[in-house]
Amino acid sequence: MSETILEAVPTKVGTVLTEHEYNTLESMLSSKDKENHTMAQHILNQCDIKASIYWIWKLAYGRSGWHHASTMVYLRTKASREFRDSSSLFEIARKRPTDFAFWLITKKWMTTEIYQYLKPRILDELVARNKNDNFYDMHVTIKETYQELDPEQTLVKL
Image 1 (tube, rainbow, N blue to C red):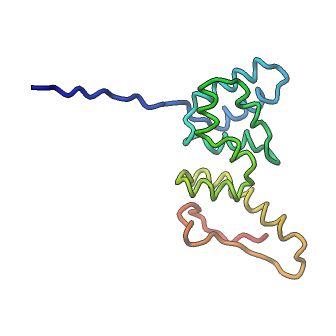
Image 2 (cartoon, helix red, strand yellow):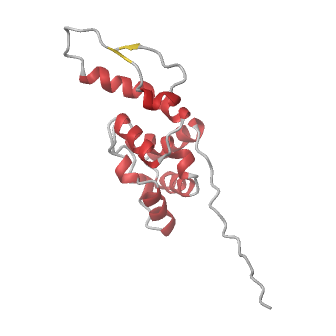
């Protein structure tokens, strides 16, 4: 009689980044002190990537793309490579808010909370694209396909 021994594979349970951690990491990554960069990277290596993806993107993208992406993974360690690859760091670092939102939808990582963070930035992109159109007033609503992401579903004037 043989016994089957099931071995539990531990799942990575990491820190979920919030705005507070984002502000701390932003400060550390903006510092000229390499020790701050190293500490920030160790924190990022331990975070729950899926639950923290918006804050990871915001650190990497900043205001115009590639803000802190390379500083976030400059240590050449296995953990840093895993973080970089699992978060698709260099891919998301160059995604504008709208493109990042569609990337999240494709990965099935988009949540109502993340959408609410992205919504003002997505609307700002729409305004920028249509700023030279002086002939019409434009209003937007979210497509029916994505309505569960926006409980308010309000008409927004651009």
